Length: 430
Image (cartoon, rainbow, N blue to C red; front, side, top):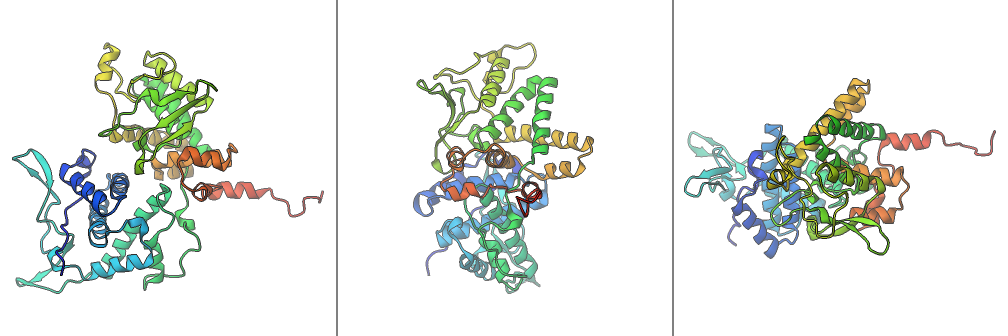
């Protein structure tokens, strides 16, 4: 029997997750190099998804434990990408969880990460195991996974796959497919790759108007903080960006010269040199986004438009009152956590404003949307409201397939209803 692959915790507590962990990074790099080519790509997505639940301690703990178990099984046991799995693959994972290797069963709870005092850093706890068994009178009982625990596992995986669908990483949710064919299911699997309950969730025109209006208001009231917020949300919406594409991380520092002017046509674009999956792309820049860039740069006391060699960080911590611009640039290149906090603050304020104006249902819906919804909203509005050709949106969004872009056609139920409300049954009838 081959030696069991090692299992290490992959996701630290939320306050430490974005800092990265050298041992986890080394493990993921080894998996990517030797077994699963997109392991690092999917691990980044898993981190982003987990961080959305960081404000619910119980949910976060449940999600990270299940993701670690699942990714270990995918990367080390099956040596397959999670996006390559179908319903039968999920069945193999269920069988694995029902009868896990004895070496992966613990009989007491331990922390997933511990502080190594000698090195002064947090490390995966070698005593942690992905499965928890029981003892009675000191004797080990046969391992058993209850139906409730199994349903929880599949629910977590279903949510993760739904996130991957919305991020255009995959077009199917094998966890949902398995559930609907299992003894827990209530009917046949959905006909298409994305079921109605998994539709892309975006801001409506009214809701987005509150987001942009609130960003303008906050920029006027607190320019030292929210001029940056206004430009950030404008850029993410206008160029369909993921937050990781504008945030600093090891090996990538976004700079102003990513805005480029074509010398022959005079057309401006935004270049993304590093995206998830190692892709790069260039996105067309609208006149209004160019004006937003000019406003932000003017606030920073920079020339209105960047030169080709302008290495000013794209997002900086604005200078404190009474200090020069150079002081603000010393603490530059904001990371994912800081940018996410700015956008979360903006969306919460926009929802509050909508509720105060009597749009309580819209406010409730806005509070359920996430930073990722900004990208989807930009794509959806451009296709359905601005009339951009699908091929143009596909190129700017970085979609490999036009079929992925087509999923945004009238995604929202409200928009579909509004577009159908005035249809005539007899166009020639007076």
